[in-house]
Amino acid sequence: MTCRNKMSLNKVLLSFMLRNSLRNDIYLNRKCFTTFPLGVCNSFSSKASSETQEKSNKKKTAAIPKITLLNGEELTVTTLEEAQKLSKRRDLKLVKLVDFETKTQRPVYKLLSGSEYHSEDIKQRALKKETRKNSIKGEKVLMINHNIFEHDLQTHIKKMKKWLDGMYEVKIVINGDISNMEKAESVYNIIEKSIGSEIKFVQKRQKGSDIRFQILPPPKKSNNEEKL
Figure 1 (cartoon, rainbow, N blue to C red):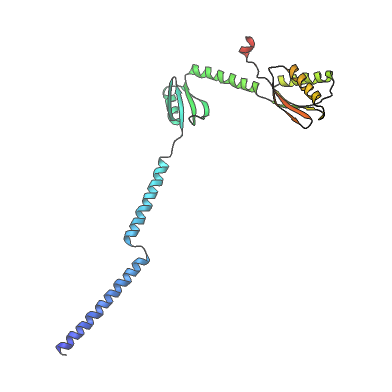
Figure 2: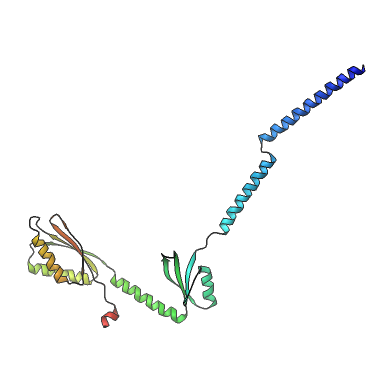
């Protein structure tokens, strides 16, 4: 084999090797891009890890409900748990005064000594009793004809007073004559004068030939007011 032939053969072999190498590189590159490149994978991994960490931190730093705590003349904003610990350390009673204060959007608690707690308990019981006493128990409905006799009307008025004393709201309907409502108005005026000025007459209106209105029971006087 001549020297020229050897050189041609070497060139052919070298060309063949280069082509094979290039094909392998292209194949590897294609295969790599069918998945994710290493840098992208690392980026996704670190991003997912960061998001997980942020969620974990949010859970750890979730807002703890606060309360308004009164301790003598001192007012502080704290957690219920801290207030309970403080009451145990100082041997005081922790009492809830308000379930939800609209201004601060928080419940209100107070630290009390044994004697203060007893006094506050008596006060709260008296307040609840007073509230129950002044609460309306229900309603009564009474229908009266505009041509009612005076005696019968007075009987109805006595019945109204009894219901009002029993803390019932009284709803009255006076059946009138659309062509002559003066008689119905006269019945209303007699009822209003007989019941008394301390009683509230509300929502008076005329519907067709009827006069409708409500009478609200007066608030009960407390024991102190009755003594005075």
